Image (tube, rainbow, N blue to C red; front, top):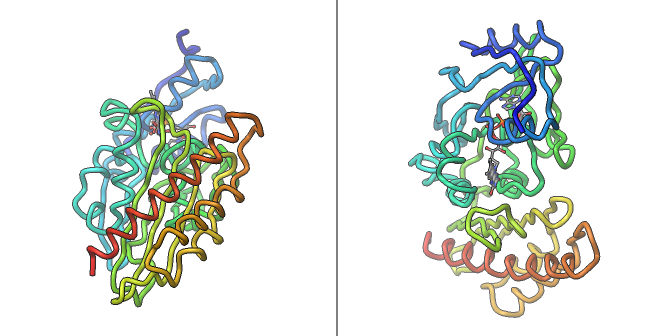
Length: 293
Ligand SMILES: Cc1cc2nc3c(=O)[nH]c(=O)nc-3n(C[C@H](O)[C@H](O)[C@H](O)COP(=O)(O)OP(=O)(O)OC[C@H]3O[C@@H](n4cnc5c(N)ncnc54)[C@H](O)[C@@H]3O)c2cc1C
């Protein structure tokens, strides 16, 4: 199906986009269009106006500060994936992006559009929940800086008003704890076919001391019911050098915590895969943390 008729505006600045947003009550922001345009084609979104922000240069950047990587809202998945500073300081983010769809989608899809869309099956979600970046939202009264955990209310629902734009995401650099001797991270995605949405997505970060003992771990699971962080899985591996017993306990904890949408065979499969991919994620993160010593 074709989208319904709409007026198109190409915003030249954040100020321009905000004033168009204030003027047109039923306007939608268009960034990469990789979620919005399919919805328009299905007539699940019927905006009267589209305000295209993808050409706003002031929203297209990746900047390094002492403890963060600041990413402008219209920066594409592809640009984040190949960014040297992202690869160096938040490698699980570029790893997660490498698993999104295909190059065509990654060339168009943007950081801001993906965070605002907040698709619970999207690959960003476990990484965002684990790293809890500050999200900057700009409106007529200026900026609001909101930790992701408060910005994300639940599936497809975030803390942004009709007259606001998401303008920046501030990813914390790894390690997440000050006294770590080594840190390793990963995002593991289980699909039937390469490029599909995740059946299960697991983000993990592991910090170790000089003796290769885990001092801090974080595990977040997506696409198996509500996005969740498993404190029990993390507790199972802290204080160990990641032996089989610790991995079994972590996998069992995630299987217990998971709440798949249906408790049928598909739900049981997702639950089992959540455990299995937690094992894989923790092993990779641990191996990388030891290599980092
Ligand atoms: C074929 C296909 C396969 C895909 N596979 C995957 C996958 O495997 N994994 C995955 O994670 N994702 C996948 N996606 C989704 C993709 O990652 C999208 O890029 C992303 O969900 C939306 O980003 P966008 O920039 O295209 O946003 P758009 O579609 O332009 O916008 C999405 C929503 O956010 C709003 N919005 C956009 N930017 C802003 C802003 N700065 N401030 C306020 N509101 C804003 C829009 O109004 C709209 O409501 C896939 C998409 C397609 C088309």
